[in-house]
Amino acid sequence: MSERLDAKLQLLSGGYAEAERRLWAHPRVTELFPSILFRIHCEARATVRLMQEAVRHLEPAVHDDPLAPPLIEYLREHIPQEMGHDEWALEALEALGVSRAEVWGRPPPPSVAALVGSQYYWIFHYHPVALLGYIKVVESSPTSIQYIEQLAARAGLPLAAFRLHLGHARLDPLHQRELAQLLDALPLTADQEALMGLNAARTLHCVSQGIDEVITLFECTARVPPVLL
Image (tube, rainbow, N blue to C red; front, side):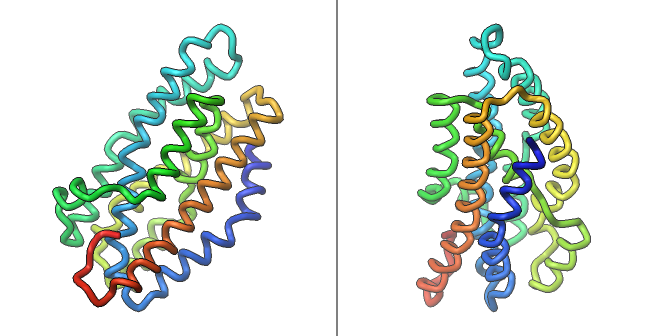
């Protein structure tokens, strides 16, 4: 199953690649990047809670649902590994001169709320297995530490601003292997597999759309003092 999901995302990755290209080719990328990090923080602050809610929803079904025991085991092991990633994003923003008070005082963008909120919907109104499609995308780091270092140098950004990216570059290869092993072992129905693919594709689209949204909003407001978008 993991190979089929990889193939689906590979087919749909063109939009994300183009959004990334636009971001890093932008002549004012140093002013755009804090807003990108802000949105990443808005997503990262919800990750642990999403997994905790999935476990709570699965626990009553542990004797009736064949997916429940392996999902609970995976999520319980994964939750501690995800703790503190929102802190990495805050540290990265501080390296760019954005205070924690400014981050926490600004409402998350509606597009981020919609993406994260849809995960709660799938957990409570269909099946928590859908969350694996989201995890597949947000923990899929195609970049190496060396590439991130080169990117920071080209963009003229301090390496400290990539605190979260560097952390994920170290952890994501292991997390992706663990997720692939889980996906291949789960006794999924055709509908459950389709939903994971749908959620992963939707997540990838939303992440790409978020980058484009930041660029568009910035270009509309570039003549005023920079704010988190």
